[in-house]
Length: 303
Image (cartoon, rainbow, N blue to C red; front, side):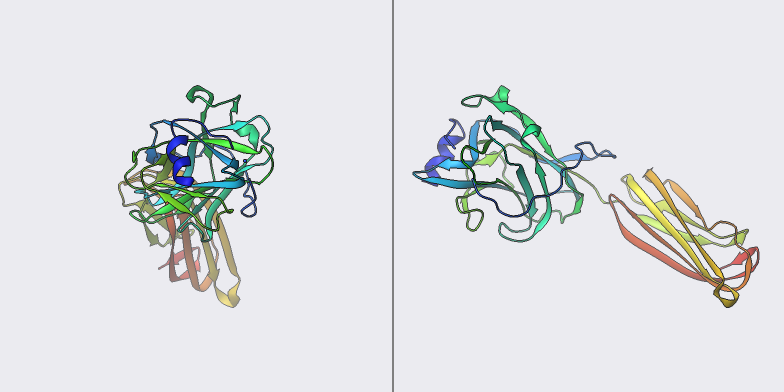
């Protein structure tokens, strides 16, 4: 029955309805603070499939998943070409997983108001690209991941998901579940209409330097992509009797390739040995740190 459903649905709408697969995620803004880029996609619309309350001889919970292979190290958001039924009341949930029945790497739920209303049988002009903007996650390029979409099992509570009954996206395929995601059936000749967005990983270097009135760290982008939302936390501890305690947080929205940012410890006064450390991370920068020891002579720091 599922085989007939997937072939006929992407090209002709089917009657539909659902049950819950777990707790729902938070709803966040659809606008990123940085410039992410399209990574994987399939946009050739051929028809729709009901997500949720579906009649397959009996009423079942129909969940849908799309596998994909990212080429960027950070996954920022996902879009599906979707709509909703007028009687839909429960949120639509999207989860990102390394396997279909495994733990969620990211999850978000969107209220029905985020989806265009479809009256009767859906047509392409009634649907829209709906953004699922979850907290960014690190992924491994070349590895398969799954976008799992579902809603709560309730009478006439369903969404419309679009796709194509041909193998338009060669790096993935569609999966369907009628038992709340416990088991899945794969359909190698079908794909959903989806887009994934992401960021390439940026690489930074940290160089410490002593000096009069304090020390500094130079953070340089040594890669070939912009580093976004970079936060730099510098701390200094030590001195005679351990009296020196200083900490500063500096944030830079973007750091272009070959660009530098200087992080100062601030003016310090004391005597004795000190330990200085800098921790750096960003939207597409893995957390890194540098710790150095030195000596302070009143207002001069030697490393």
